[in-house]
Image (tube, rainbow, N blue to C red):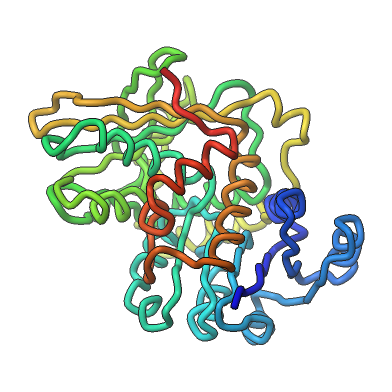
Length: 364
């Protein structure tokens, strides 16, 4: 029996984009948020969808909505601060879980809940949006092209045109600077500082440089390609500010070692960047596009294959990906259970088709 799609955070920026995409696809999600007035207004505009109120400060309010077999799609962030109640509710009720985070610490949290997700017989899928579906797909395609000699993968995320970040994205990005990052090197996961290195990619738009970041690829790629010993993931949103940000991140890491400084910075960031404060308009999003590049390399550093994917604005991609995940998880479910990467959850052909339907396709 098919479960329901439960969209938590439906009245936030990414949540509302996702709700609208789901309705266009023919889905009827249960819209969940903490403000009943905003919920009812959105539900009415979208054709009279059902609603329920829940708040991350009241975990029981989330759990009481869920039933076994449901698909909980959550866009409520920053996740490292607000995500735990939704994850725990999904685990307790046997509901599949998918989120829109890009925060390294939360990605690690979800993947480290693998045994709990298996015990609950659910798929737990984190960062299923522009962060970090495109890179997972590009990496899987590059590895397939490269063959068995590939032991290393580098993935880069870039954009073309204006970049407008939502309030939630800025709050998540700021919070991520205060938490340890990670990378998969030498066949194991290592804790490192974010933005500790950079990497140059050759793209169809010319050379681009990204800063290292903890992403789902560090967990997901070695699981679909055990021969891979090294994964690099890089974020290239910053253009000429890349070097200053790298050095600034190093300075911040040193400063946060002073007792009490991290808590003070966190409090200041919460006040300055409260979270869901809107994002780019439709016309603004139409002016930008997304780029993901993956390199598969031999152990000596020789590049064996490169795959570049281009698509629409990252927020539109995220809404489309979450729509696909919600519909698939609530009907057929994932291909396996546990904490899953995108390819593990839906298979390479299924993920490729879903990304193409969202407008994300390889460029030659």
